[in-house]
Image (tube, rainbow, N blue to C red; front, top):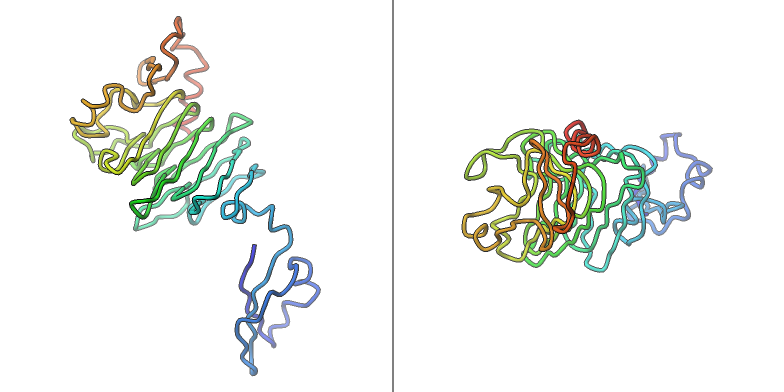
Length: 274
């Protein structure tokens, strides 16, 4: 990736050897103050392995450590496709955004989320965990979730789609930290569309585990939307199996599902404790 660096002539800190160790080359001089400083744009080594570089240019990201975020992991290019493997690690928002933000945001482009180790977490903290389509009405970010645990620390939405953004879920566990009173009646805002998806936003569920939230029977959207979408967020050909406050989405032709088994309990509890 590239960066901006201002070198102070009398600092005595940055030497040519130190700069050469992390920089491929100085792209060009942006500003020079003959008396004191020079500002240059730098091109860093191994840029193709940088998370920010891949979010901007596409590619596969495999986490090798936990990430505490001071801003969202964001894609905003319709031509960019990124695959993110949580690889058992945790992505967590550790900031408060007065404009309401997210741990992962896809304004435009495509993001696929996997978790090869089965213990990966996306925690929105006091923000949304995953947000598709933010910004202009034409924004059409797409997110495909195949695994991982997704949660928030408060009543923020876990999964949110706006404008023409779309989220497709066939695996993972989902919860929020507290009830929200932003709906016709209090509920956990695990899945939510902006304005009933009037511009084309969608959330489609064909798998996964949900805590305190039935993706086929909730009040996230208006009465009119629910009447027009009797299965709500659940894809055609799928159904919800319930065990207490836990809900699992499976194919309609799957029978004999043991909803009180340890696998279901563990998966949902991971979301609550993430």
